[in-house]
Structures are given as structure tokens and as C-alpha cells.
Length: 219
Ligand code: DC
Image (cartoon, rainbow, N blue to C red; front, top):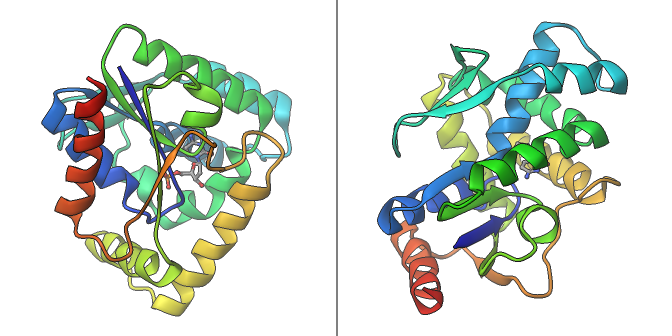
């Protein structure tokens, strides 16, 4: 069974997807982490997002692995633990440009389907329901208002020792939303068969239980 969870940054998608996967004993597929890995490698190697040919070979020559168990899954790039670095400000600011490249998406989508093959999965991203797993048994679209999302991001950044104001983060979130929703290749969108959950006024426990309840009805 596949549970597809899509939504914008800060909608609570990641933490909820992890908790749902853990409680149901499913694997968690963090597709955003995969786009972040490719972005990190491109930034390190000074490959521009405009250079599609180089980005194609860079993606093809990058091994992405998830190691360990929720909540301590490490993201491994070519044998190196990059779990922290892929969450850096630099990667976060640039990932929208790199994840919009057609060839990068094609190659990563193929990997995402392979990871899910034959396994119960909670797959989380922007195009899970629309492109990667159109036949998913349960499709969730998570949202939250910009202020709530900025507050959540502020907490994430605090853990990394980075201080940012709510205004600054709201502007960054809106800019990223705009790019992610208006890009040509697999934009962030809610499919007709997705169930929308607005998490602005929900506790973490409430949003997790809501999805688990929906999943149990399908099992
Ligand atoms: O969920 P996240 O913030 O880690 O995602 C990082 C970026 O990757 C985000 O800007 C959108 C993009 N992304 C995507 O385009 N498609 C996905 N399936 C997952 C993430």
C-alpha cells in the first residue's frame, strides 16, 4: 500500500509522514531529501541549474541511500552522511531551481518508484499523488497558512543555529511556493482524489491520527 502525502514546505508533511510510517510499520520515502542531495552536490561542484546536460549526468552518477530507522534515518550521498548539510540555508534557497530540471525529476522519479516497489510506503513530496504514485491507495494534501509554516521553519532553523525572523521566513516560503507551484515540470498541486488536511490549527498528534484513521479504513 502506498500513502502519498503532498504539500508545501512547512505544512507539517515531513514529521507527520514519518510518524504515520512509524506507527503503521511502513517505510518512509522522503523525496524532498533526494532533490536536496542533488542540489548539494551541484552546489559543491559549481554546476549551474541551467546546465541540463551536466545535471543529468550528475544525477545519474549520484548514489542516494537512506540508512537506519525512523526517526534516525540518515541521508547518504555517495557514501557520505549529508543528513544535516542538505537542510542548510544554502541548499534550501537553491533547491527549487534544481528540482525543476526535467531530467533530474525523471531520474529521481524512477528511483522513488523502485524504492517503493513491493513495500508498504508513506511517500512524501510535491508530486507523489499527481505523477510518481498516481495509483496510491491514499492521497493526502497537507496545507497550513504561511505564518504557521514560517513559525515551524523558524524552529527547524533554530536547531541548526540559524536565526531568522518570521517576516524573512514568510517571504522565503512564499517565493519557494510560487516556484514549486508554477514550474513547468510536475508542479505542486492537489489532485482531485486527494484529501486536503489544513494543519494550521491541528496538533501534531491530531494530524497524525487523522491520516492513520484514513489509512486504516483502506487497509
Ligand atoms: O520537502 P522539502 O522542503 O525537503 O523539499 C525540498 C524541495 O524539493 C522543495 O523546494 C520542493 C522540491 N520537491 C519536489 O519538487 N518534488 C518532490 N517530490 C519533493 C520535493
